[in-house]
Amino acid sequence: MDRYDLVMLDLDGVVYVGPEAVPGAADQLAAVRDAGTAVAFITNNAARTPDRVAEHLTDLGIAASRDDVVTSAQAAARLLLDRFGPRAPVAALGGPGLHAALVEAGLRPVGPEDDAVAAVTGYGPEVLWRDIMRVAVRIRDGLPWVASNGDLTIPTPFGVAPGHGVLVETISRFSGVSPTVAGKPERPLLDETVRRVGGDRPLMVGDRLDTDIEGARRAGTDSLLVLTGVTRLRELVEARPEERPTYVARDLGGLFTAHQSPRAVGDGWELGGWRGSVVDGRLEVAGTGGPDDWWRVAATASWAHRDATGDTADTAGVGVPDPRTAGR
Image (tube, rainbow, N blue to C red; front, side, top):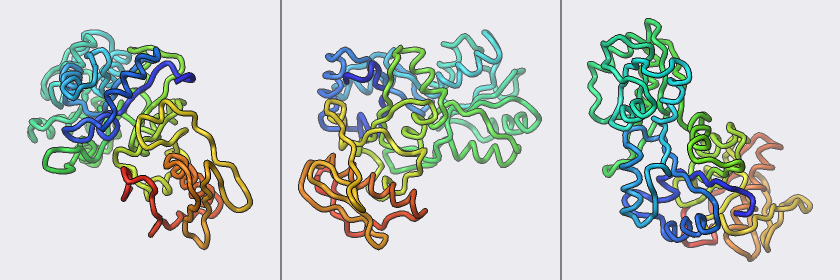
């Protein structure tokens, strides 16, 4: 917290998992604010308005107002406003959050067949196929296109389901056009967050390597990977250079600790009582120490092996020392 004046947090997998807050998240985020650091909640989900997101967080015991929330819909609206100016008519295909963001930005959302200077798409479970077809044809015929995000999946109460990225791929394949994307891992969402909330030294906190962490790297921002969401040991050791975080910790408690870097010793890496190396293609971590340092050693040893050989270390049978991340 001494190094950063803004913490940008992904939501699902970082602040909450499904309907429940991540254990300890409310107290940890209150402590961040008590330290004088600004907090922003950012999401690729363009369907919900900032008010709805803030209400959900408040219901979970996490203090939040609409001004603390920045969505990919708002980032998309900023891209359109900068290009086409106030009151520009935009054919909008998405949920209430997308329409609200356009109006907030001073743009004019219109229907799929109305006169428009551009099209914008976002996740919306009520979007009709006939409207998708009409907008797709217009994009093929030259209408500029901004997509809120390219996420292929979205968590739902009935399991992981197709996300807006599936629609983006469908329209792209039909039209031969790739959209300008506002959400992570592209940088407009992070840029919009800094513009709205302020901060000269932002830190991105996320649980996904291919959106949160890669997005931070593209924006030139440091990042903290927390292990309360989707990233498990296998995903971590497979991370490409552009997906590797600045810091790794089990949860948001990592915001309040000093993060030491493993040091190279012989053919391995050591930190906090742990030693990690890749032997005959297999990751081995031995010793005794804190669980966060175990993860840092495992990641560093695996990445060094991948960079040197091009191969991903085998993690079968590797024991994770912290029961809260068992199986991850």
